[in-house]
Length: 315
Image (cartoon, rainbow, N blue to C red):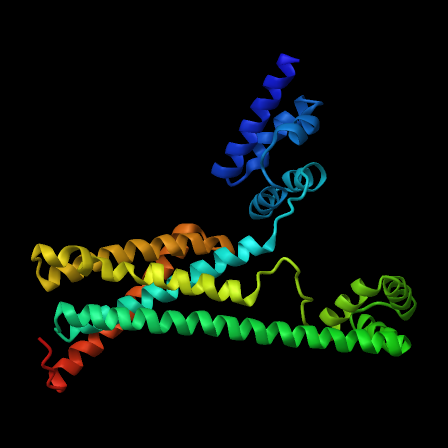
């Protein structure tokens, strides 16, 4: 009915805004839970808040009611890890690109060299480091994946040829965690009936290795993403010189514009980086900005000192 639909809409809006703007979201929702018998039905149909978001809010505020709602009434989301891995690679590749390139620009400015030198060294660093970062990511990911696959093959071979030995090892591990031998043997025997699951479980418990994820992007894709992100964000400090040098601005003015552009990009990337940590977005942005400032400041200082020690004549 119309009244039920309106009530559900109100509940949805209340939950949405409470999750975003309040530290104790369930306080606002308890009155709805108690006064609307159709609350759960409405939540299932209309609420767009994910279980993970609601559970995090419940934990942060210590609210058991919201935690119960999150676990009992909101369906878990199923997302491909590939997109998350791409975003993470792009963020960290961009951070490396912008910080290293700006450090080069700052060192050249500190040495009081010309704009031409800034562009030559900046682009040389951008291309060389970008290739190194992308290829290095490909090599490291490939080596790790090959090692994990080899270890899994070994565990599978051992389980297929001597299952009693593998079961005994797992029982001992469970006993070390506080299980009684009968409990451990019962659990392990039951899990061993599901071969692939049990082998993955052995890898985690025995070797501390997470099993391979089919949704993980290939090393080639991650390498390409890091390379492209490195080039894209690493270009930011150079944009001031490319765009404004023809206008006749002084080197100091160009460097000031580069500082502003770089600081803005660093803070933005830091805020995005907070999605992969528990840090508040603005704190994450400030930390990344401080990191870039320290790196650039050190590079500027090195260039300034060397300019007074070594005779450099680059017009």
